[in-house]
Image 1 (spheres, rainbow, N blue to C red):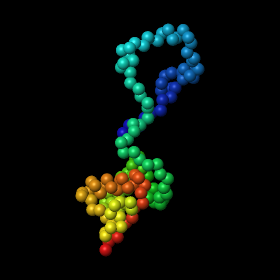
Image 2: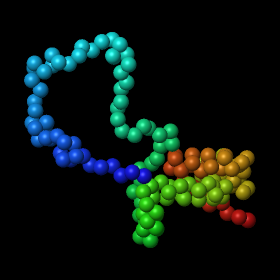
Image 3: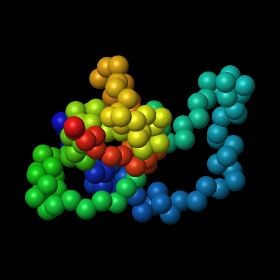
Image 4: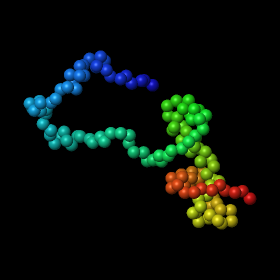
Length: 141
């Protein structure tokens, strides 16, 4: 991984104060080329910033134990994404024990609608978490 160098007046070989102080005069516009239809047809609009993700995240304020935060921060850049991955993995492994209160089977004999496969378990868990529904642990009888 290469570190980005911060540009300075010395590394640019330019007098930045002079460049910043320059104000474009009316006669300088004559030096600009005319915009043609061909130029405009090749133009792309760049709104900047990071592209929108299909899997959006929820902004949440939460408190963790100092040792948990210290551990993940100690893993380096991307520690929050790794923490998210650990939590997702935990939810996927334990989602089969969860049931939505407003699901049709809630309150039935065992209170759980069995999932057909692991993908459905993860989808149900993600849907429940994304919609902020109350989730209860399945009780074993």
